[in-house]
Length: 366
Picture 1 (cartoon, rainbow, N blue to C red):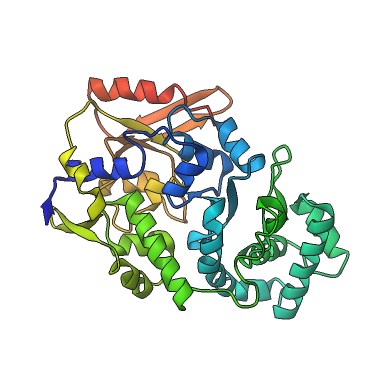
Picture 2 (cartoon, rainbow, N blue to C red):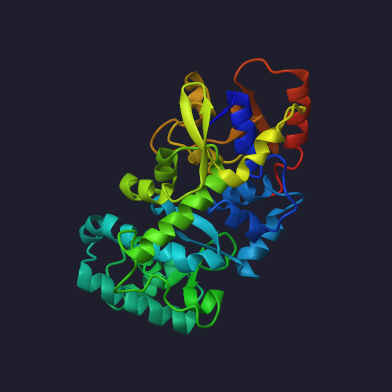
């Protein structure tokens, strides 16, 4: 067992998260290494990627999704929108799709999308996207409403989400400020097919799914260590029992930090030997950043008395100022003035102030 201080543990988490040191890596390489980037907000997702790379820009993130098609936006972990590397879709969609379908069944029924109507709606959506895609949500609503599919209110996005969870549909290239949707197999590559296996998807409860949970567990710990299986389950949104079974297959080392027992991959233990003092590292994390979402127990990354500033409730997660892996403040963009407003939680050193000034310089890149 290794014994680490909270500061050392946060240093390791920064390294795992590509926050320090930042690698020379492409957009899809960073997205894949992190196991996906949450993108409820497109600009925030872009900033999450850029803050983890060297010299990456919003234009490169846009190009990776809209032109190179090396990353894809769809619903995955916790039923939320993520950017993922295209090569990860084939195993992630079968893992998360079935739970997304089950979890939203009652809501679809409330919206008039019973099993038969939903299946017919997905079939018609595939037809219209195959003939005319990419299409905006408004264009999809118009086309499917004309064929008798309930598309009022949230019914439209729930039908699109159903088709996405079954592996038929994903987000396409933005049209101005509007999202579009496309057929997944047309968008990523000919012959990609239906990775979620519509009609018989592989969930976490069968052998194929169990293998995928193991792969996800390894990806998670690679990106969030030191961490616990409870952290992994919270990040993935999968049952703890299945996460424990996957966790037990990992080659890990125990890390003791105060009264907490955490885990590193054995392949990461050389990081401990490389720990050293360095000038303050400041990173500005956007809303819903993966670092802020990655742990069930957040006490190591933010003091409990400050948590409400970043996690106010209702599923909201605000932008955070990270100092050496710990949330020490919050920030927001004042678009009308073209400024960034920062509020630190208490006094900070001159070194932190200087590092913060450097971090603020490129914040408007995405």
